[in-house]
Image 1: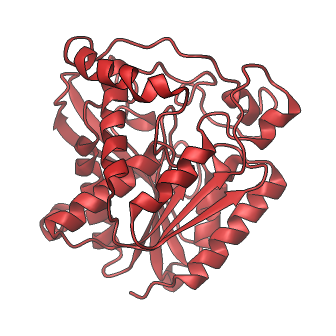
Image 2 (image 1 turned 180 degrees about the horizontal axis):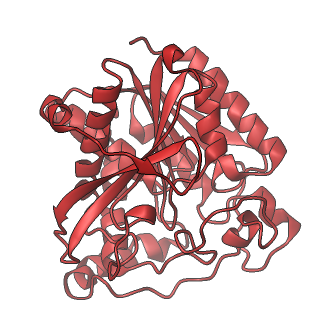
Length: 333
């Protein structure tokens, strides 16, 4: 981390989120998966009180997603936390023409941009503790990364981990977690970029203001129906799941937030706004204890898959619980 921090000399440009937000692009070199050069983009929010910053929050998005959650950034800023959001390789701002959205053959490849981003943060905020916040697939990537860092004996500024509906197992019938998973391992060797035909979801419709939602975001970066799921990428996710199921140790206090219910109904109803339409919340609750020794799990009534994009009341409850947990688990520079 120290060597990377010394090499960090970021050039910041205006970000698509507008005033108060800037972005820096990391050139990650040639793509190990053969899709040209890859990049990652880190976004920072200008602190409202720079002299009062006592820590840093770093956000990692999920699949078919990117960082756009200004309200989340405002929450951390109000608590003296400088805020950064990371768009991973081939995701959101970082995706380049001709690249398969979100494709990665192994989740370990994301260590590169996470290392670089934490080095950038360390250079900008020396010695300040980091709260790593991650959603869905990001909520799988982040604990695996911290476990690898810990096992390798690498120092890390991360002192807390907040997981927003982390993807810790494959939803659906048991056959998906048995024969289908075994088949993925074979197909990933020969047809890694082939898209799978999966059931449609109305999740995007519940979020975006063009439908029944209240959130405005770029649907080219986060399509309402999501990006296609590829065989190689899902195989990488399943290998990540298997590691979690064997047990990892993130080494820091962890908060896991998830909805209190799941609904996989393909058509929209009012209940669609008050459930996780993407993941099985029972699986999240079951596997959360495999992340480490200090894990707090909270089911937020009527929350959506992205807890912080829920309706007003469950969203308020989630923020209140996060605020209380942070006070219960203070960090010191």
